[in-house]
Length: 250
Image (tube, rainbow, N blue to C red; front, side, top):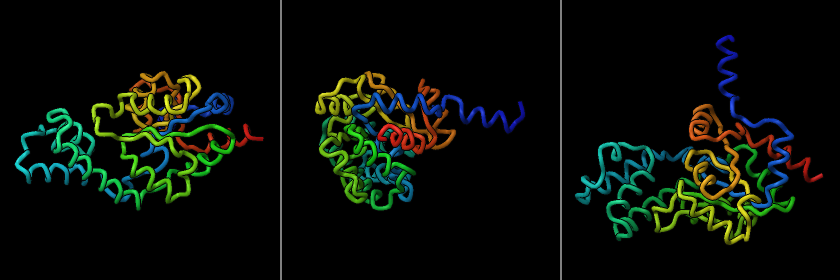
């Protein structure tokens, strides 16, 4: 196999592209649980998550709390790593509540410049139009999700089913809590749902909740992470899903 062919095979391995399989997935999904940052938009496309993580670390250090974090945690590019680390050491504290609010404010600023995922808006509207119920299951603040969806004219497709970060930070994905909250509120069996996510934590949460999972992998790095976690059904674009739904709606 040539080098180019090898790269092509690697990029498509584990990617669900067969229209029949996609059609079966969409036909069975009476409830669709969406992760937010990734499948719906790139929240930090123009507002660096790494910078936000650094700002949270600096804020802790300014309060004399540098020792709360390990060196690895201080260097992380993921603000949720900082938040989880502090919560593990001071669960339920005012410090954690203030840190979480600082992150929420940063996410709200990022939402104003978030980049919509290609085909997400029409896919959401089409899925709602054919009778499936939609929910958001995310580690981001529900305030941020509502702000973004309202700005895109999509809030009514999901409301009131937006399940995001709470003060119980130990329940963030990969814990399946937000998925279970959505299923309970919607009166849906896990087998009648479908989770669309782009990270190993999404896949793990879906498995724990018993919900079928479809990975959205916009690049090979994302696809490799999902494959390594055990995900075997994924798409590199939401466009085939949209085509499948439009066939279903005829």
